[in-house]
Length: 407
Image 1 (cartoon, rainbow, N blue to C red):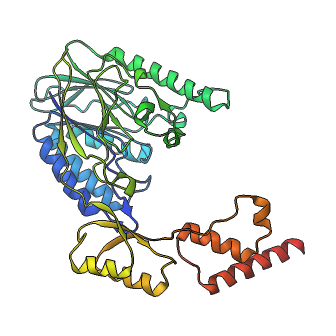
Image 2 (image 1 turned 30 degrees about the vertical axis):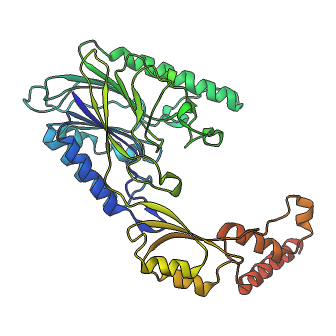
Image 3 (image 1 turned 120 degrees about the vertical axis):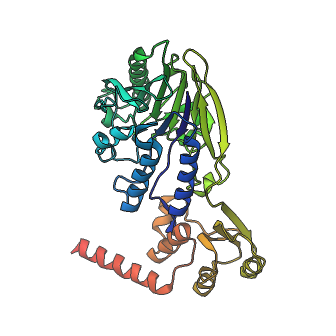
């Protein structure tokens, strides 16, 4: 049995106002092409970027599901991620199931049989159980999929701990999910291909302590909490493609298909193709994703260097964060000149050798006039020098608010 594992599409997402729709369409064409040799597709959450995605994103999703399901000739399992509305995502389930597409919005959801049990060449859902899909596939094999959509405390509908201590909550969360996976794994059989999928964070896969705080409303778990009896575990949530080394079986994040922020610009982006036979270890093949525009950071020493680079044809198809090394902030005429250039600048930053900062001591800050506090705040957040008219307006409003409060 061949499985295509994908996740974190974030359909509808833009970058600093630039649409990513064309890149998404190109990526999904690749997904459909690779699925031609697959018996089952697993989409491990974050289908959309928001709870209320634009209609164009929903149309793209439904069109892709129809192409992947191929009229019920191929199995497709979709689970909700933290960016998805679980109810909205799963609402068309009764219709999509007839096309071989099964959608679970919340942990514990149950999908009805799709009526294809005796249909030759069609995917059939057998013996539905909460969070478990037993799928008879046209290839002649049966897959048992233990599916846990994004398991936040609210979606689990479980009070994990009466303690408010973060350490206690973290421990209770991991223990609870370990029990959930252990219970679902009881559905695995020696004669079936047994896989699990979820949208969650594994602690060892998060490279820094700052990333190990509460992520999207849920804590992290150790890879050891995942079920050892699964032959393959398909995860979503983290955008870096990687194996989970502390898991007891073959477990992977396939990663996001596009670089959605500058910090992801160097992430490896791959399609994850998995081959599994009952009772045998999974074999994983990683195929590079071709779709998607590059994200680059362009460091320059002045406006003239940018103009020369544009004349030389640099970065014609990239999203660019421009960092201008200078002794002052760019003025509005310079910014206007840059924004008129035929390049997609997602951010323009002035990098000063010693940027003015607010005093660290709050007592010292209280001695600064409101105008200086506002200037420092504006420089830190917008990375430009505010116009005097804006500073004057802030001071005027501040004085008015203080006067109203003392009246």
